[in-house]
Image (cartoon, rainbow, N blue to C red; front, side, top):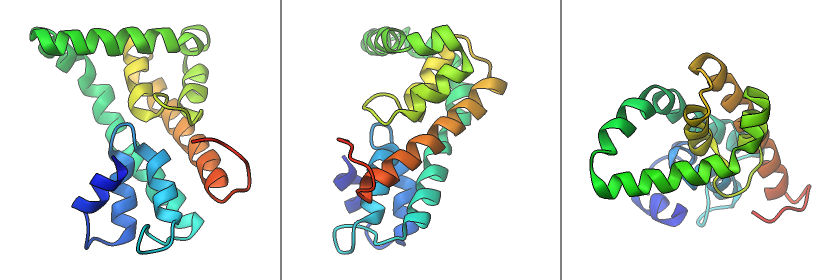
Length: 166
């Protein structure tokens, strides 16, 4: 998925590409930081500081909108059978993986988002906050802290400071 996004964005500055990759669900900063740290022509060739900052900012961009719009959009989309099935699957999966949030609330949300594993990023964190009734006021800073934590882990793993399978 990261390669497809990058091919669409050819010609843009590496900072903008890293930012935009990080906004995309699934890729998020787990795709943006390794791409940004990879030397050209395969990557952006950014410093670790630039890669971290642009990726975290990009990953955080959709979060407020997701938190505001998930409830009204899910109500509207659930009226359409294929979307109802998809949202039912997504919500059930998020509930199963969201035991940490159910138990610890916003603190659990920080660690849920901050663990750089598949389906635990900012997008899924926003869905989990919606499903577990974490208010916007508490969810936004929790998700932001989780994204920053995940960014540190992914940056260190990309620089091979720590060993991690991403």
